[in-house]
Image (tube, rainbow, N blue to C red; front, side, top):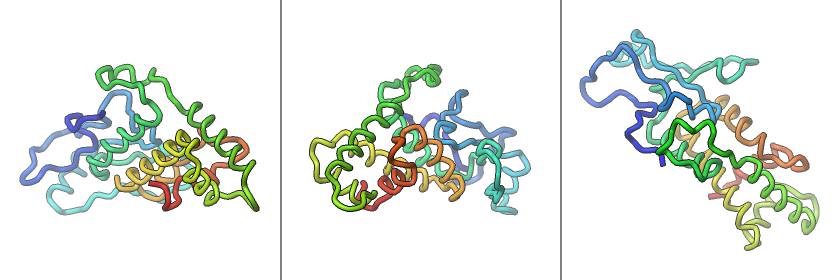
Length: 209
């Protein structure tokens, strides 16, 4: 688990803050937030002072098009710290279940479970197609998963992804940043005969939880 002592996206403290000439970037040198397609930067001293003094509510949101997400980094004070911690924990539980935070320097080498997740969704989707009446869709797939005890593995992954995306939204990302994160996380786990939009709809249905 990520602990609260790792200074993730830490906002300004209550009361009179102690000024620093640098706000830390990501919690570890390996930038785990990049695994969510979220790229963070520290506030410049002038931005930090303006925020503290109330002269300016700093907002680094952009309306750029045609750029990679890493070209539009998120300021560390714009995201909710507790949600950043929770989102990283949810991500690790899904994609890096065997990773130990006692060895943070090995995060880049942790075994990613994306292929296993994709295979589990693919197998469940194939079984759903074999039993579906009418046009197969995300709603029907969710009903199938909820009604079929043998699909516990896929159902767990879908619910886990639902929770992860919900937490990323709570962080305070913009719709464009949310879309970039979904694209990054879902592309490697989407079965070829399903389509990413279909998978995203399955995950985002209100029945997921």
